[in-house]
Length: 196
Image 1 (cartoon, rainbow, N blue to C red):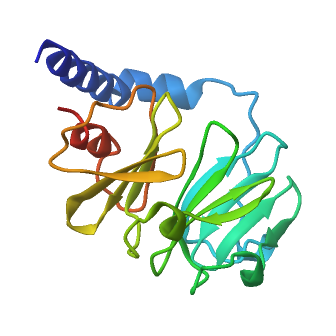
Image 2 (spheres, one colour):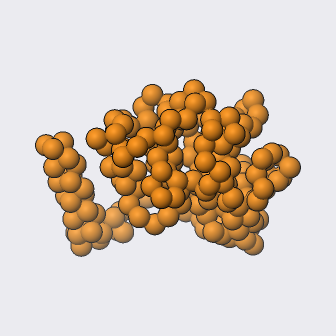
């Protein structure tokens, strides 16, 4: 209970700090060493509706779009051919996250969950026995297990290729979780879902 109160307090403090006029004026006025540039369809991005971004250790940026999975090398966008995503009946990627081992987990439009690694592609829906539904959210815990949220609040934990359904959030909270969302509600929802 105390930990939850601290978490709520920290969120409130951060929210008030980040929305304060003083912080906003400093943030706008501060010089930056970062270069910003928008990328649009005219620049080769096949679709501007983006569900996820991830950078792998080789430096490539991966973009999950309605048009499919796209890689970006800093200059050019390349759409991953549908034939390379075996087991995906449709091109749109609705959720994506990079795991600790540099794999890309892809929640596809019509249900399959794919894991793309240097060694190839695995259909985790078939391998781990997951529902053939669209993944709404994904998060990885500090031990490398992946937490998946499906429609109707179904929650699964996948570790070592084996899926375990978590009933009523009776599993421990993932520590140091990265979160990927395909809807607009707060990213902390998945963490609260799996908290006891």
